[in-house]
Length: 130
Image 1 (cartoon, one colour):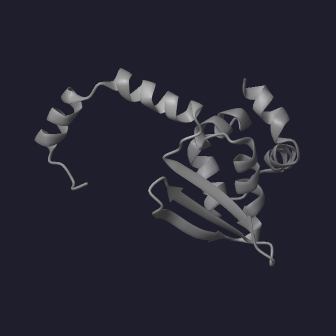
Image 2: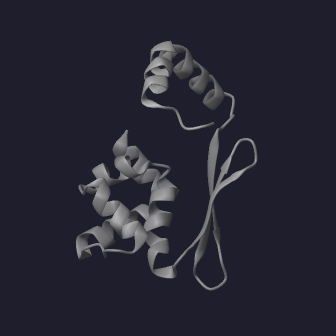
Image 3: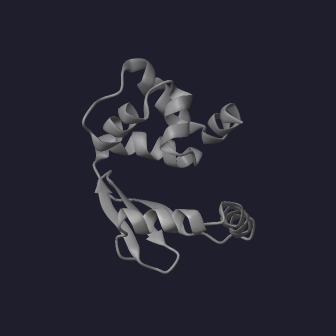
């Protein structure tokens, strides 16, 4: 899709039926259809490959995650939570979580403990959110 001008964007927004879009998305989820899927594949050297694939088969993102960051990314991926949900659960900002996942910052001792628990017991973490 080509980039829209501001005027085109306003016209497009006005023509949308958000209720219909939401109903369609819920029906897709109910029937197991997806628009984007994230797969994590462990590599032999401790790193992990993250691949985001669209439903049409195109690969949106394909990256190798360093071994040091794998624990953080795997903990969140195992729970199935979004970055914002996972950050809220840990009591940190989304920006802090993004910095941890990108390797720009290291979690504190307490946060590392919570991340280990999330990685070991994702079901319990999902229950805590519900």
